[in-house]
Length: 207
Image (cartoon, rainbow, N blue to C red; front, side, top):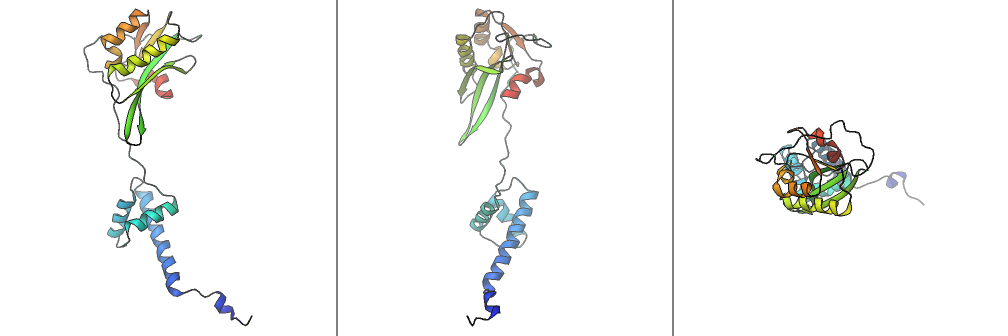
């Protein structure tokens, strides 16, 4: 076609230099993200500027999306157990206990679920033998009412004859209203040792 071979390989110098510069910035972004996995695009932009690389934060965000990089969210530890109270503490009745069927031991615990604008608490009661949740409740506070709602759901749907209810020493499970419901339904009460979450490991694993 009368076109020189060199023409086919020609690229404007400005575009070529721009691509090299973007590649260098992306490599720096990857290095910073590797060293500081909790950095978002603003903190990475600030680090780039400290490294004498001047780039707009919107450009950094775009490059991070292209690279599939997203700053990790640093999880805040949220306490769900308050064992500082004067209520009665019960012995552990399920240590080394062998189960042969359902409704022999229920295990209760509370955890939290992170949502878009914060988190909510989940109180659940699990049948240790079947690993099935037999009662649950979701709420915004750790009041005993949350645990009581989960307990009432479980009692309404299951047989409680010869049943052991096991939990930690949290005030939700040791409060008078909760204990009364257990005793009124002939349910034996068991609690894990103080500061020993492994006594309640079944609930912890599932939740």
